Length: 136
Image (tube, rainbow, N blue to C red; front, side, top):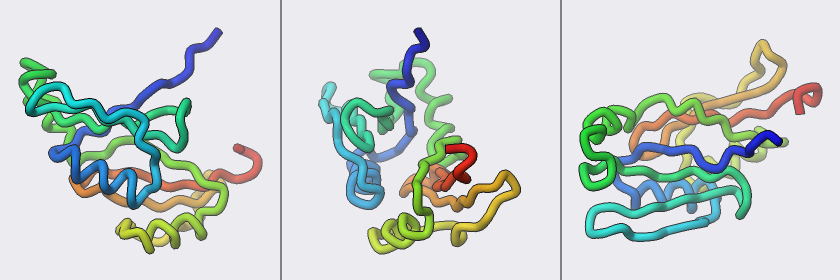
């Protein structure tokens, strides 16, 4: 049996600010929000419970130890995360109305689908895509 994907980290500098963006602007549901001491909390969001979660991860010495400096370098970079939609034009408009600032309008891509990109408040780069019917 092939295991399913449980969570994907998004490295952020301010979990509260990131939570507002991913919950209020993108519309993700908070699955877990647990404090782990004064400087760290585990926040996981998903489209709905049981689906792959995005974990808002703020690197700290308490949690990451010697890797904290290296993990901090991942804040504000390309994430490789692609959010899929069945109607990119409608989703694009809805997210813009919620405050998401896109880098460009959706456009047709050589692979047959449409995509656009945006960044979260830390500058983490994400994509919004609609796959062609042959890829769905």
